[in-house]
Length: 600
Image (cartoon, rainbow, N blue to C red; front, side, top):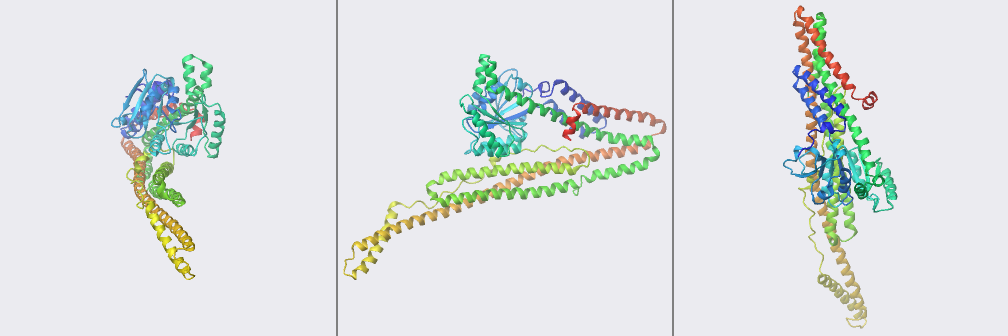
């Protein structure tokens, strides 16, 4: 269900600037149609879609039971806590003139990309809220847990498409290591992260927790703001109309931070994107017009102009060749990336194997094999998630390097890359095998002990018999007890050593399966990313070649125009170039000069 039909009027940008950007893109689209450049028209259509629907997606996550749903409900006034309690999918909160709740199955989830890059089942909740009316969409995820890595994978898959993340942790205790580890992953996938400390009404020493959390973040190298608040206090304040209590709850401060840090920055990013799109398209259109104008103004230089344009056309055509500089960078970078990702995966799993073997050798693994298996699968899943995040960030770096090598002048757009759900990667991997060698029964161990005792009694009894003592005497009995006990404990050590060896072998077989499955899936995803980058930059190269061809054709045609027709055509070209210059000036006015300089 889409409730953003008039998103442009409620977006983070004001209505006037949104209208100006749409008019600007529409006017430029008319010029591209007149120039018969549908490829550039498609580029502008995509830019127009971003302006019309500039929704900001804020993912709310944290460990289970930290009050995430209550927080989203306090911010938006939507019944998220009630809906999210029974929902197994993310709850997406959007603007609506009236409250509604609607489940969106996976079969139709792709129609609204609020909850990730692919078709993700979710529950949509609508509410008439001012912050939502500004184009903000909250995605309330299920709480993560150290024992349930699938939830963490699902959360991570949402982050590359998010504009900001609210990381929620209550005031009952300071950050624990799994939370810091998750924050590191989140920060790699989404630069804008805000820490929220909830339930300060229940814990009077919340300020100590805030200071401790700040210390943990500083030690981890994470510069993240921390805001304490209470959803319960905010609800009481709304019901009673108590303004002081509303401020004390901290929810209003969080809303202000979202407005200034998330919405405000997103507005600047959107304006800069429109300016760059206008520049890109107008430069391509102006290429043919300027070539034609030069040929019309000075027919005697037509041959020289055509030669220059032919060289430019050849240069543009080289961008499409397999030997082009950017394709070499992409191919070499993709190969190096695949090697680096595989090495990182093997390194992480080797560390897990060392930890597992040390744990196995510490005691008899049979006593706690199920618990050990749960711990091992959790550590494997964490390593796979870390490896997937590394692959995603390194792929983004590769895209930036290719963009830098692609064109000598101007900025080239980089495609949006998404992190697929890493939880499904381990689905084909079999569980840890049970130990074949079971604990020896007490009867068997007693029998082995008796055998040792019998040997001791017989050996010492025969020796003492030479001194005239009976076969069974205190000395032989003592020896029997000693040797029987030794046999008992040696048998136990032997059983433990055998089970430890079996446990190590089971771990090794599991790791081989993990490396095979994850390595294959990782290579497939990297190849998909490489194809995405290749197709994206090939499209841009094709557009540049088309512009060079148009310029060359325009110069040829200009040389064929009769003398009495040149003046009229020169006027038409001047008017077209003037329109492009005016559009560029209007686009530049969307962003202050200091902002443009800062983003270059």
